[in-house]
Amino acid sequence: METRSARKYVKWGLAAAGLIFLLALPIIAAPWASKKPDTLEKAAKDLRFEDKAVDSHSILPGYTVPGAKSADSSTRLSALIGVFVVTTIATALAMGLSLLSRRRKARRAGNDVGDPQ
Amino acid sequence: MHIPDGLLDFKTWGTAYAASAGATGYALYKVRDTLDEKKIPMLGITAAFIFAAQLINFPVAAGTSGHFLGALLACILLGPWAGLLVMVVVLTVQCLVFADGGFAALGANIFNMAVIAGPVCYLMFAILKGAMAKKTSERTAILISGAFFSWFSVVLASTACAIELSISNIVKLSPAALFPPIVGVNTLVGIGEAFLTTIILVVVLQSRPDLVFAYNGPPLRLGDATEDAA
Image 1 (cartoon, rainbow over the protein chains, first blue to last red):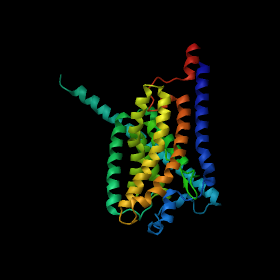
Image 2 (cartoon, each protein chain N blue to C red):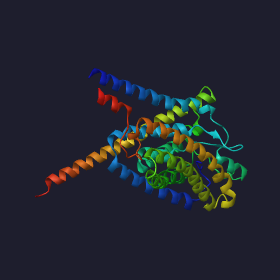
Image 3 (cartoon, rainbow over the protein chains, first blue to last red):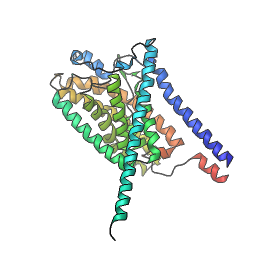
Image 4 (cartoon, each protein chain N blue to C red):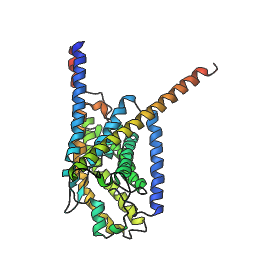
């Protein structure tokens, strides 16, 4: 029994480590990503409709953190924040849906019990 | 491919918002009914990974870069509707927190990169995978159909983007002018998408096929054989 639960902890530990690695890699590598414009930006430049685009307001525009030490750390910090925010919202959404689903099933079960035979 | 504000006219971004809201609402309803509690962490992890992977732009043609999309991957792993929701979360955070994509254009960006690249392409993926699975193993069918349709999802999403720009009365350019730089270059970006999607699917199918929504066969885990023998 002990070896089985120990193996389970090792499995979970490895999975967690793998996940952290999988997320840390792009966060660390983010500043090294190509800074060339993406297809839409390039088309906007070449076909001259760039000036029609309007800048949007946000907290961390363009994946930069105002007041960060360097451009690289600014990118990495915003990447880290983004991963955290996305994970929190996605998980909260999933948990919320799961809660709604359970309530619905409970209500259904309650209704069935109350039906006159 | 995230469209900024100012390039789409009201009829275009309004219609796109309506379509995206409808699709998202339907997805919420479907996922609520079918969500397996054990899959909850997978939604968060997939969203995190897709957000992180989208940060890594890679050069494609001269002077242009592309990035991973992940919509079809999300659908293959989580199912078409949960995959759609994951993409909606990623795109919305990108828009609201990082100004990656305009707020009015968010409906169009969700339509292109979550709805079209997600459930629409998943449907096509599933049809081809089903047909192929009769001749080859299910795993091979998933990988080949996944590779092709992840490429196609990028091309189709960029096509939708180019069409939206051309029908808006702002960027007064014809599809003939918009398609080559947008759709044409994205056929190259799609190769990167297919590559990364396939690698991830190979790894996940090998280790935890039970985590792949599109895989219906019995999960084959190395652990099972040894634990039964113990």
